[in-house]
Length: 112
Length: 112
Image (cartoon, rainbow over all chains, first blue to last red; front, side, top):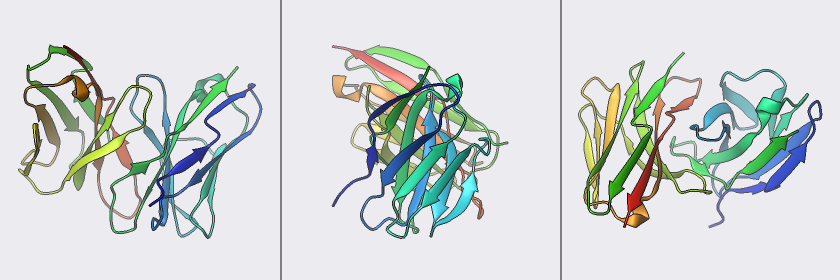
């Protein structure tokens, strides 16, 4: 059974740029969620996708957007990067029958 | 919006001592989950509590869900160095709009 994978591992971007982060769900999971974890903080829910539709959203501005593909992989896009967007971005998947989150290793984004 | 608060923020213990972290939600929860994140790692699911007053045990770990389903605790008996990490609670209020809210976590360090 393949776990949740994310790419890239690390990324450095400049303020104002755009970034795309990628995630492959665990086998058999059709729901994917994205979280932002700032240093020393708990993960903050960005949004969730189920069957390629957004199924819930946290308190993040519209410049945070996502996609889920038919194979249940997902992308997180962030436009107009700000310094405060520097964080660990975690992808998590779960089967529709459970809310238990299976997290990937994360992408460390640094905005300079 | 829903808030989940966790105390203490940090706890340092001698190996063999007990440890407890507490979690309080501003709203009634459908379920509460606990995760452990090792330094440099990603959150790993420990357990989910659903019923009012529920108590679950995993070896040296005891998890409780309050009668009002607004608070929870994690107790570790006789800590070991392998228990080091940050423990997060995460609450789900239920409903069709999915949103899992994490606390800020309790960082546990264990002195051998």
